[in-house]
Image (cartoon, rainbow, N blue to C red; front, side, top):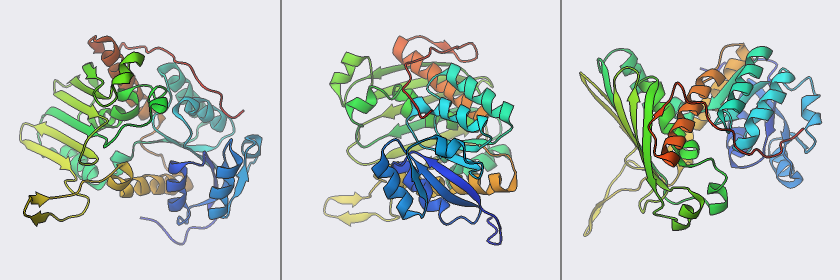
Length: 350
């Protein structure tokens, strides 16, 4: 737990001033372990708005951050294609890092980011918030305690209520990289490493995605190194809310994780029983997002290792890229030997 008596809070900088930056800032503002010093964004107005809310400085020039020796950590919430280079720059200036998933946009960039982190000897936590969800943590505890015995199966289901704009989907890296990566990380978290992956997909919610070789619905099958089998279903359209399910099957039983209603109630009337699912990831994982950034702040302040770290996140990135390749190509992909293919990057703050 947090020690309210902690002194000398660590100054941190937010890189990016969007929705996730604001989410993390609200939590960090109440932490005794860190202090929001700077908000950096290429756009001056969002940076100024967010900085004003939390009594911080706004900046658009990255040198104000990199050249400031007082800033001890950065919170990166910029687009995926910028992650690797920002991690490298932060590491070069000995600043600890929290970065939203994924670690990078391709495997080469991810490996480069990990090498920079390890060479600098700094901490780098990657934002897989499900690992900080109470249900997921309890499932992990029971699995590690042997309550399921030998692990035999995994099932992940993730369905968004509506798809993101087409412009975003065209640059997101694909359904497995942008959305399915959370389930794939959970598969590794609960079961272990995946040996092979195959997938098939369709464009049902947005037919025009077919013109770009993209999918809004996909099913993948996983063969784990320990012999377990798994499936993953992801989709970008429901009529009933944000649906996240996870099952782990073992020789002694099964664990099922699902928030079946946003409110713990059912409404009964002439139409029968009704319940309301969470509307989005912010509602479903509100506490998990809070837990992960609080944990980062506490561990960095105390000089303790963070998790999931860059090395762990590289494993999930590699699996997601392999799954995306399987979806795009129709091939069965061997994860260990998968090398990935670099994609076009975008300019990041120098």
